[in-house]
Image (cartoon, rainbow, N blue to C red; front, side, top):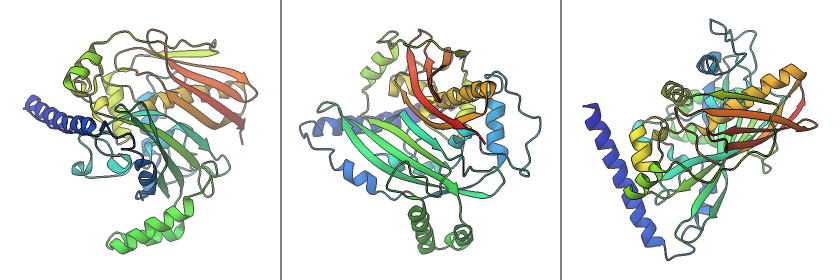
Amino acid sequence: MASLLRSHRLARTLLTHQRAFSTTTALRNSSNAFEHLQSSLPKREIQPTFEDLSPQTSYRLDMTLADFLPSTNPPPLLPPTSPPRQLPIPHHLLYFEPSKRASAMLPDGTNPDQSPGEPFVRRMWAGGRVLYNQANPLLLDGSRGVCAEFIRSVTVKGKEGDEKLFVAIERRLAKASKSEVEQMSTATDSEQARNDLDHRVRQRLWRDSDEDFGDCSVLETRNIVFMRARTPEQAKSDAAKTGGKILKPTLTPDYTHTILPDPKLLFRFSALTFNAHAIHLDPEYSREIEGHRNLLFHGPMSFTFLVTLLQQELKKQGNEVIKKVEYRNVAPLYCNEEVTFCGTKTGERKWEIWAQTPEGGIAVKGSVWTEAGP
């Protein structure tokens, strides 16, 4: 029965991709076919997401990573909300994911809010940037927080007929104001009140500069690349590839750590981030639709390992904390294949971090700026 359901889902997803492939062919002769997306997508008004800042989700991530990270020893019980601890730096990735009905999600299990639509039905996490406001951190005290999400920019790259859309999604995380929390009771039953609340949150948190915190504690940019569907033949060919261009690291690491990710790790991280993207959960989908040889290791999970390991290194050397991270995902990482995380100090309060494939090529590369801790 499970196999029948999986085959039905694959067939339905494949039909969506085939329609997108046909749309691609029809639009191939129009060089300006997608320019309108550069202006229309940033105008989307995405509903802000409220969430209670409980230590539960953060604690579960610590437990999930404990067997994969050195010097990690979570307490046997859930930490209290008083006195509260600060939201750990990479753990913001687990909070403020929108809650949608399954029927509202795209066929591959992803959130439609940022999607440009057909023919760009595939997506990958291309990288991003995170800034942390040490003067105004989020606390895991059970209070309510809010995330306002905006599409900051859209860039079209690639030759005609093979364009890719790079969408910069800006997430602004903050404590919910007292008036916003009070208004939620009426917004639950009134569409007008809900629209008014959404508008007020967006107005309060938006800034013209993507480095201006305003009331926010964390500013995150997620760079997502949207691509066309692959034909079944293309997917099969790509999944069978074993080699390819390798970008070798040019720096000598000050520290390294190697893990072997398994399906349990990928599933638990997907669950913690409320992420149903099939490339992390369904190996048949990954091979036959997306052209990957196995389940794909999450882009944000690479970020989590890289940043957590660097924080452990910083604690050994003094009281510096992470101020800003910029990173790019340049090659895929897979389940059941070793991943090596590396880092080295390159200057005053400046670090380079990267993740390597089993062949020694760079899969993720990032730069980190630090500052004096409290």
